Length: 133
Image (cartoon, rainbow, N blue to C red; front, side, top):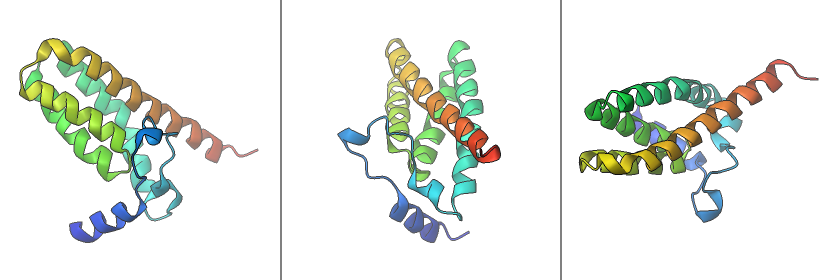
């Protein structure tokens, strides 16, 4: 795979992030591209599992695992057109690197809720496409 070409192509389709796109309407322009839609849909389908793994790591106080998962989500969120999710994951990762465990709850809840909203929206959209009226 040519990563430079993939990055260039994805970057050309990404939503520009600003205050008005925080907690975006959860529409991603990559979903409109038939070449990238299945890739983004797979990412969104995996969000639920990722959040569950993060929840488990957090409940086990496995800060290294949680930091690794936040790092993965930071990269993949931005790569797949969800800069706000990436930003939230970066904040969580930074707090974990600083061993600020007492400060992660609020950030984790925001990231979890955002990821779950994206996942649920993808599930709803999939049902609409599977069962058109």
